[in-house]
Image (cartoon, rainbow, N blue to C red; front, side, top):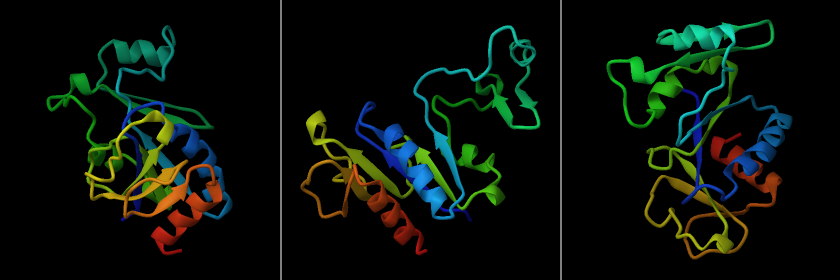
Length: 171
């Protein structure tokens, strides 16, 4: 089974995406193949209105796959499935990934999932630590020392975050 590591924060705007956009190239440079699942709290669309794929999906297709020689994307309309949930289910999203293409799946968001997670915390935001309530948080990536017994990693030291992940993976 492919390792899954989440990145969570108390609220949006803390810097999860910024951290991941710097961390992914660092992990890739160390030979890891990375996939990402990102939680969205709102409706989103990766398709463009008026394009054929958009028109086919809007016509009622439950799933619409578009592919080219460079990439493919599968869009599933959960509102058209018999078991639609309020929030996407991480296990369902993970089951859609081709794990043969990756060594590690990074998950952004999904803070309530029972998966190993690194909490991204910025002291200046004044938000409480999730780590004090969530046993699945294995470390805190922070810009300032915080009161916790869990390991702390300098949020601004991408190499240190990458090293922690490689140690967690036992590489």
